[in-house]
Image 1 (cartoon, rainbow, N blue to C red):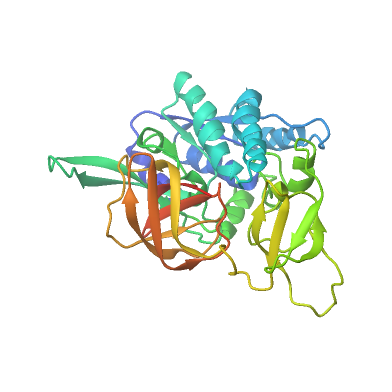
Image 2 (image 1 turned 180 degrees about the vertical axis):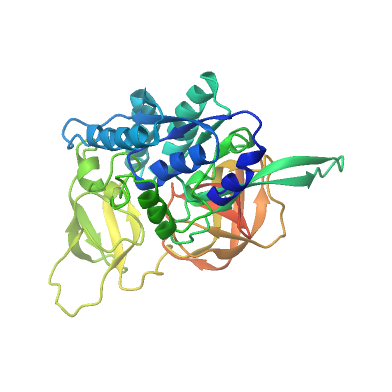
Length: 379
């Protein structure tokens, strides 16, 4: 449900529905709260406090102050919800564990699953919320679906891409279930980013000109390699070319991603040399293989196997139908089909080879604008 739809339906609300809004201190979540209040909802702001290492700058207090300022202007209460344990165990520990195993995880997906639509969602429901809302650039829609076996028609909640394609965050929400989608509002999902900032000015919110948050969910813009070095005993290793010749050195194979072109040293490199891309890595031997050709080696694949499947409509997509998918955030959608599928695994076949396929990343399927769900790429 978009901000526009909420405003249009405000008069139809017989009694104020209670919605808990995750307010991070940013412009998107503060405008979400403002739109919901304007639409007639009983709005309760919630600032989620998560774990942060003691060696990082303490930004959460500043972010909470911004959320408090916005809540005061909107005249809504603001609660603080401590989800440090959930974040540390389900996001940070998961990320470290995956890198140690040689995979490249997607902590933002886990943050949404375990923190925002896990701990926060569950606590809001316990406290009597009718809905939760976030500032994600995504949308929901109710549609009648016909069951394949009984032909019975039932209502389902579709997860749609955000109107602003440059900001669309449906990729990070592929683990959401029908229970969550039926009770979730995305007030800015039908808006462009510039429209959101104009609304922030209209509501007199101090976040109107605040820069967008960057980097890892909640932790912000940090150097992932520097972060991981504090928890992983990474050792310097050799950089190989496609013929197996040593051409440089790196800080530890577990720290790198297929397709990456920075962070390792090439010996005897000249200023006009073409860039090198990582096209392979061997965790046991602690080596990475590089090439001037990004699609070299085994880094380009047409068939990709995924596990940990989750589908937003409650059932798996069908085989032999043309879908689209992306294997990383903001990548263009690519045409594909489902070749094999079971409760635990699926094989996705792309029309054209996908470059820089990284085990541990999310492959997310779409049917037009509908985010169907997906899985984790198997190495």
